[in-house]
Length: 367
Ligand SMILES: O=C(O)CCC(=O)C(=O)O
Ligand SMILES: [Fe+2]
Image (cartoon, rainbow, N blue to C red):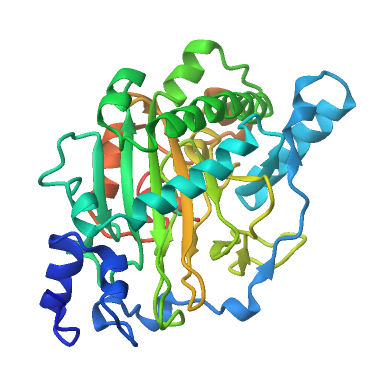
């Protein structure tokens, strides 16, 4: 039954508990967003005045040699990680036909009738590895995010093939496999620049846990009042993100750069054949703050729905993450204390999104 749009509880029940999602709400017909989705004014951003990111994507194929091309590309990666914390890559080793097929299949998934997706709602999902939902933590949020998602945890291929959605599991696994190869190279470059030559076991720890998500942001009648995802940084090591051609991902600049000032928002435009990469909180801690896990948000659109497929590459749950000794020695001081990854993660998942607050919590306050 369609919800009473004037009643927050009725909307919550329909969208969150019954698993109709925001898509179900939009499909039931509405001309203005219900109050539950209206963001407080301080959380909205001025999209018209956002800066346009116009750097060409980084060509990762050049990392494979050892000549000046390799060093130039390594420099581009390091510079991006140190400033914006976001960059786009091409020739990344993920087959392009796969990226296209993933987008088509993910659209098909979200087009399924609500009851086919609701089988993965947290309370009833046949597997703890797969969770379908809406917003981030609906119970704790002042305003709900304008998105639906399915989150899949990777343990091993067999379990993924057993539990992930049938129609898309093989594709997602191939996307994950080929992305991991790329992320290993990015780690070698970014840690190498800090004076650390990571061996296989260190890399394995830093990429020990993986989650994939498919996110659908339905068309929204009031894009100025809502957000697909509110301000947050990613808690992982690196995020790899496939976005479609709609746009809407904005990143906040942590410092003045050649393209704008600290606090400005920058749009990460859809770029053909590219993947978006961003630094996560764990890499910011390891680098003692040199690499930026930037705050970002997703805005909504009144003309297009949007799809994205992020892979969150995280440390193993038991990993102890602290600023690397080589960096601390050079800096003379550790900016962050050691965190056990699972503790950090649990803390973040227990609260509504709140910018970079989790990372601030890991900060050692000056004496
Ligand atoms: O959809 C996007 O572009 C970004 C999503 C995101 O930031 C997240 O899920 O952490
Ligand atoms: Fe994110």
